[in-house]
Structures are given as structure tokens and as C-alpha cells.
Length: 227
Ligand SMILES: [Zn+2]
Image (tube, rainbow, N blue to C red; front, side, top):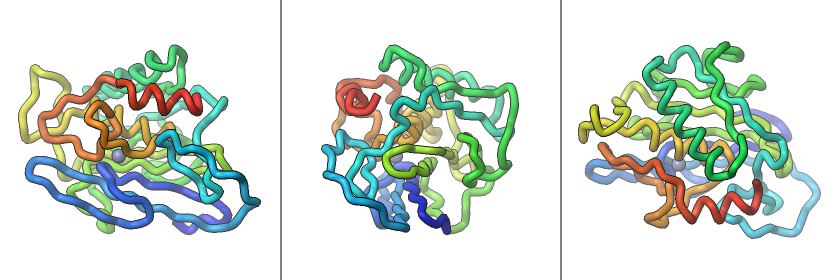
């Protein structure tokens, strides 16, 4: 990414191992990969328990901490019919926490028209998936941090290679449930890593036609470590 003295962590949707791009393929499913870029050194700290959060190079969990709510702007590329499912996904995290962690903003479209570090947290529908990324990624979330503090996040939805459905009424098994996908990506935006417990919304794989939009015990336990 080229930043100096900054770190970022990118969660290609449905990612696997940290530090390597390792896409996996399963019949009707898609995996993401994770790329970790670490540059610059800092004073060392005692490692913390991960609580399933991303850890920085000093072994500290990265999160927004008290710096909430986090405004996430929907780029103009996001079709209007998907605004509400995205809001519902954010509201699931807020309800679980009992306070507002995430605010989905649609009244303006600040920042860059392409995902980049621009001072705004944005969600984009990418009609052209970046050529250096696997086409089978459903989405990818990047977080930027300094020390343990997340400073920015950008979420890319792969609208070139996937189609999305809203609920049971338009579900087909060749489409991805957008609310479930965004719920997972917002978990990354909050600092969470993958969790392959079958109860977790942070499982790496989301199948076509699968609805997984209820936050359960694994994330409740994780989130209590940081929020
Ligand atoms: Zn993921």
C-alpha cells in the first residue's frame, strides 16, 4: 500500500491466513484472502489476548476503542435498493452492543470515488474488481491503524463477479445475501478477524443463497474485549 509508518490489514472477502494471499475454492462458495502490510517499528508492548481481533505488530488488538460511532459513507456506486440491507447490518452490530458503533451515511458522498486512504470510511460497489485481486472474492475490507487505534476503513463489494439478493423473497442460489456479507465486512471494519465457529458471522465462507445475518455468542464474546 505504500504508506510509511502505517499499517493496514486487508480482508479480501472470505479470507484465510494472515500474511499471505491464499484464496481457496469450494463448490458454491467463495473465500477471501488476507494481506497484511506492516511497515515501521514502534515501541514494544506486552502481547494481548486476541479476542479474535486483528493484532498489530506489537501484539495489541486494533479497534476503534472509544472513538465511536464510526461514520461509514455509502459511495454513489452503491445501488439505492441495497442501502437498507446495509443499514440493517450496521444496526445488528449496534443492537448487539446496546449503543451506536456504526452510522451508515448516505446524505453526502465525501472522499474519493475509489477506495484509498482519504480520511473517510466508505463502502463501494466495484463494477470492476481490481485486477490484482482474485475474481472469486466477494468483498474486501481494509482497515488502517496506528498503534492499537483503527483510523480508517474501506469496504469493497465485488459487483463485477457477484449478484446480490436482499431477503427470502428474491433469494436465488446463484446470488449472495448482501446483508450477511456486509455484516461480516462491518465486523472486519470494527477490527475482528475470522472465526470459523459455525455460530460466527465471521466465518470465512459465505455460500451462495446463504443467509447468516444474526450475531451470536462468538462475536458477543469478542466484542466485549474492545467495545
Ligand atoms: Zn472476511
